Amino acid sequence: MKRLLFTTAQDAEAAFYDALEKADLDAMMAVWADDEDIVCVHPGGMRLAGTEQVREAWRQIFANATALRFSLRHLRKIDGMTLAVHSVYEQIAVSGEAQARHPVVATNIYLRTETGWRMVAHHASLAPASPDGESRRGKVLH
Image (cartoon, rainbow, N blue to C red):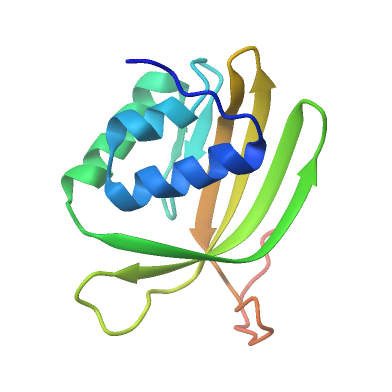
């Protein structure tokens, strides 16, 4: 499989969400760095490290075959020369459901490599509050 060249972190992020919506494992893994130090945390899940664990988790998610649509809101980003950190609210719509699911807050970290920008970390969790200011009181852990 030929590796795509993502010339910006934004290009890599767009490819990440496109692969997620299409449930395309090869396209998803093309976004990730080929490195054993990559990390992925899905909502409520354990930390996955390395390409094998990350690939297997995405394979299992995609095997579910639920069509998802992502709407990103309230993007905050820090873009440097070799590292980019993006924080987003993911509003997820599931095919066949009238109402969107609970929002997810995600942090995506991209590294500029010799083969272009690649994801090195994705950490997603259920959002404790709406990005529009609707508060949901909960216990702050740290």
